[in-house]
Image 1 (cartoon, one colour):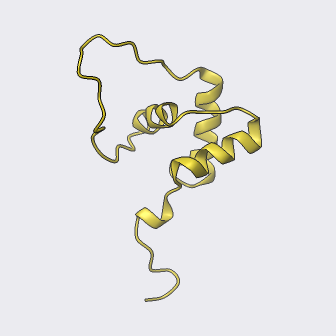
Image 2: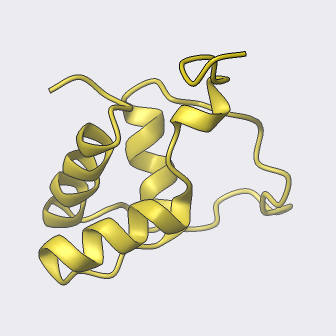
Length: 83
């Protein structure tokens, strides 16, 4: 193996890395839920959520536009979505 032989998982940023990037560059704190919503919007779906609510009709907060833009910038920084 060479330095260039990496798996797809190794080239992706973790949720914690994305949170840290957003906090450092914008001062905003984002949740894993918001990151997952933005990733799903861009077609990055990793796996089924294992802790879904059992009851239907539960309210799920939607990511605010300013946090969505900050998360998208972090995803671009980590080369997970195109510029």
